[in-house]
Amino acid sequence: MWSHKVFYKKTHPFVWCLQRLTLGILFILLCAGCRSEKQGYERLVFNGLTMGTTYRIVATVDNDSTTSLSLKKLVEKRLEELCQSLSTYIENSEITRFNSSAAGEWFGVSSDLYRVVVAADSISRKTGGAFDITVGQAVDLWGFGAEGGALSNELPEQDKIHSAQQTVDYRQLQIQSDPPALKKSDSELKIDVSAIAKGYGVDEILLLLENVHEVHGAMVEIGGEIRVFGHRSDGFKWTVGIQSPVRDRGGLAAKVYLDNEAVASSGSYVNYFEKDGKRISHVINPLKGAPVETDTIATTVIDESCMTADAWATACMVMDVQKALDIARSEDIGLMIIREESEDSLEVISNNSFKKYLVNEDR
Ligand code: ADP
Ligand code: MG
Image (cartoon, rainbow, N blue to C red; front, side):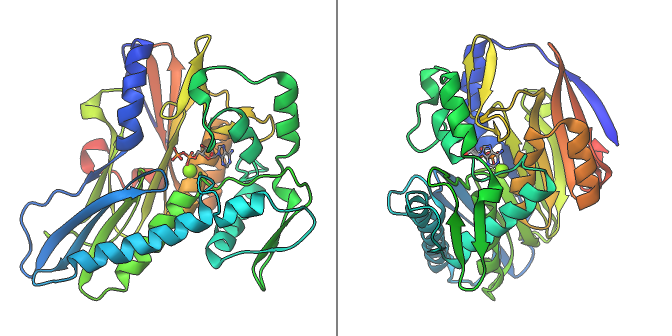
């Protein structure tokens, strides 16, 4: 285990607010800059909007490649398909239709939604429900869902919190593989895959790029969740900077080298509102139907799949630090936790599986 302390000056809430906007986008920075192109390769960069956030691709392609435009089209077509399936923000998406469907009946789903739900279910079981995609009603109640409202800074009434919590339970969601289908036993149960869908999207886009023979490497990022394969256009490994919640050490909490891995983060300071001096985060404790109350302010996970890294990062925001570290060890995932140790100091804890990816200066 590796732990160090960072002292910082507490900023005015307004400054936190401003930082929140920037950090939302910059939580994980792409450090894909090249020294110089290796012979035969060039660097192709494109970006856009998806899943309520931004995406960015940095690819290593043949230097006479003509794929630039067609690659972007291919990527955006797949992203659009994923949104139509997984987004609770789209009125007639597959997930929205499932959420308004009747209880007790099998609802046929695409392989995308099926795979996301199966992975989520497995992590729910391993975490005893700390990760639970049936948090939909609670997410909406606290104003972090499609209808928004979180910035109104009002806390919901206790009986409403209780009713929303009653609908949260991954065991009330049944999964069938052939043909892929879902069934809920409570008509009020609502699924929300925001904590895992971006990671799944990254995996799917990476797979798509890996199958294009003119692409020799890529870094795929959606809303701060990242996965890489191959090498950069200068022949070096991909490096990723992980934004610190405070502006110290050049704004980075860590910098990691990646080969064929994914890195994903979750935090209580990016999407939140403040009430009576308390930070009300968008990460929900499923057992309470209310935002987590924790001194953990950010988690970062390195794993082979971005989908699982994304889900584990959220789960580790819910579990206490020791439980998160124990589970990371048994699952063999890299984990870095940043927790508020006192008014003016943060503790950064990394396990050995995370530490092995650190760029030398951080070792
Ligand atoms: P971000 O979307 O900012 O990257 P996360 O990956 O941690 O952050 O996802 C947080 C979102 O996931 C919330 O906005 C909510 O929609 C949903 N969510 C909140 N709590 C949980 C939870 N305990 N398990 C699964 N999903 C959650
Ligand atoms: Mg997540």
